[in-house]
Length: 231
Image (spheres, rainbow, N blue to C red):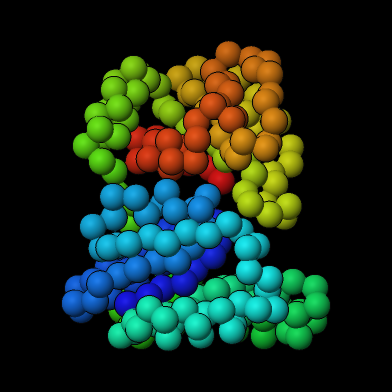
């Protein structure tokens, strides 16, 4: 089975329940994605192959033809094209034909569970309530447990400053950090984001700058060992 999903790290995690269903049905599962998001699928036992390409390598107006050629060339028994499956169908940005619908109608059409929705697109409409899956290697588990032991005496919070799109940037976050750290002496906040977010100073104790220090994979796996993740 071939699955295409170009997107960010969260998009990759959203498709993981579908991948496990395909594998359990006996398919050899190949995922086509962009290079920077592939790490979300590392060590996933339900993925046999990951094929990556640079973001934007195929112009948008040529993607449909490229996907048809890919399906024919690879001779997949099952082919699931999830390219912009959420962005175009559920996220009504300006210019979308449903952008100006009344709130109630927009809510009715687009307020769905993304994982359930993706499973339905992949041929499993009856499978619901699944959660995204992230798998760690033994070495990663060891390093994460070591980190947890080092910081075991506090409530550890990971704060993701921004996502992959401009509308995912959090404003006034510094006011919240200051209030939390002032009210609770046993909290540590670890700031993370993409490498392009720039580095921030640490203006008060308990705030740890990991922007550009932890890579995407390290940030993802440490979510398992945090007490809270904000993002």
